[in-house]
Length: 105
Image: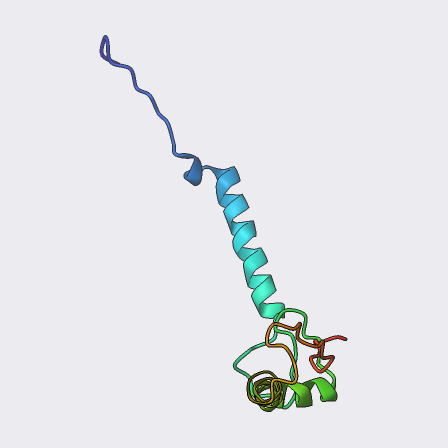
C-alpha cells in the first residue's frame, strides 16, 4: 500500500449473503402464492375467488349474471316513480335491496 492511499473495500448491501438470502426467500414466497392461487385464465363453469379458491353458491352465480338486468329494472323504476309520475320525492333515500350477494355468504 502506498503512503497516503488507503484501500477501502466496501460492498453494496444488495450483494451481501444475508441480503441475497432474504431476497431469494421473498421471491420464493411470491412464487408459492402464485402457484397456490386459482388460474384466472382457466375456463370454468363456476365462479370462485381468485385468492382463496372459495366457490360461489349457484344462486350467487345467477345473481351476478342478472346484475345488469336488475340494475336496468331499478333505473326504470326510479325514473317512473321520481321523474314521470313523481309519486316519490326525487331526493328520497333509495330503498335497500337485498338482491346483491357476496361470495361465501
